[in-house]
Image (cartoon, rainbow, N blue to C red; front, top):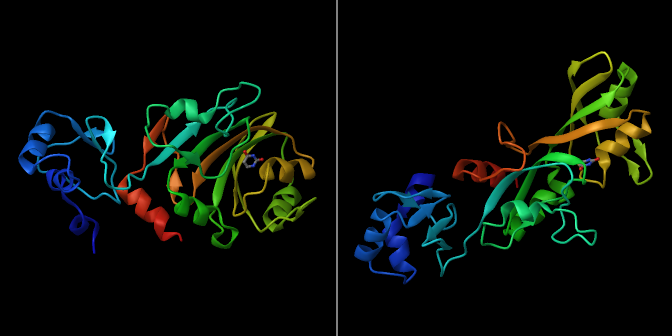
Length: 242
Ligand code: URA
């Protein structure tokens, strides 16, 4: 069944959830009290409970599982845990307007910035993190100096770390200044501090690390510290990676 075929008029979904009659639901839509994926809905709009996030009077549509998928551009200095014993800011402070209880799909270090997915969909999180799916994650890395070709080849082939040799990766050189080099490193594993450890083991010191891609998702122009809900197409592409 295609995306459009699966979607129904929003007033029908609200009525089915037992919140109001269809007529009443239509009035709510006209009054701007219904949102779909964060945008005020218009009469005639269609949605599906498993594809879209529907809010009525600011609350997720009850009676249905309201799954939430958010892309955050994590700033440096934020922890990825829900609470920090040292009182540092957490990424969940940045999404505190979202009523669902979210968790992150994987983690980024305190000083890493970039694409972090937050959701309440445990099943999708579990599969995206499972090593057998080998979801590629791309990091923009800034190092001091200019890595020699041998370093790049080593990163691509695999690096011996204390928890074993890393899986093959991809390196793309982005730019170079007098003092620094920027390159994109795509890895399919998700070990603790993996990119920093790979670079350090080859004698390169990482001065900036930012995740720019996660599977089919790209950070694009999302400003640091901001988040957005995934579009239905983005979600489907991600689900198809399973
Ligand atoms: N690799 C790292 O070294 N740090 C991160 O935050 C993510 C990947």
